[in-house]
Length: 120
Length: 108
Image (cartoon, rainbow over all chains, first blue to last red; front, side, top):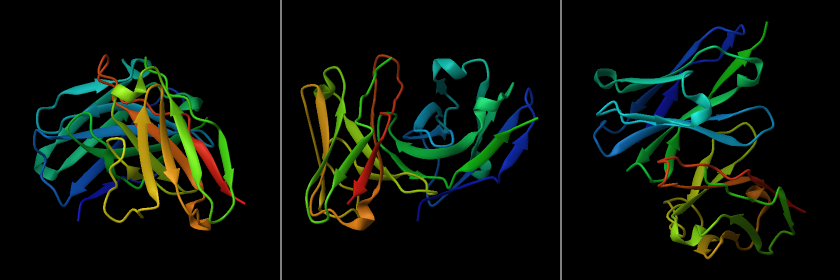
């Protein structure tokens, strides 16, 4: 079945960068699929960050993350990556990847989430 | 950017019908998706493209979308339906899919 498995929890200091991976199985990256990144701060709602098309490498991100968010992919191992730089304490959150079929489609399935804690 | 507005909380007795709204400017012309999230778990898609149900989602879950309001309806509510629910649309002007703020469904 389709499954997304993310890398483990991270603890980072303010100003550092974090890179989270999301490995896909059960489907093949092609032009129809997009991978979205969504985060959720403790006790807060879902916040969309950006998407990458793993086939073409095209990306698009929310304005608040532009300049700090880098999304990349390695189709040879069915993995996408999300790197967030210049971390601040309010970047502490659970980060999710999710598959989207056609750029405007629903997010399904989701990865299990990766907790990133930013603390000095 | 496109703003989606959800009530922070909705309460319903078991066996009754819960309606969770998602408001947005002319949201009726957009496609809306709904997610359920239980504590400590990743979100799960429950309704997509306004009213379609993924396999495995009970028929008790339904959706509608018209005018400035989309609605997720849960019939014959069960204790296991208690969760946070989020709406999401595709904003074609930005190619971004914002989420609503989420609604906590409490089963009394």
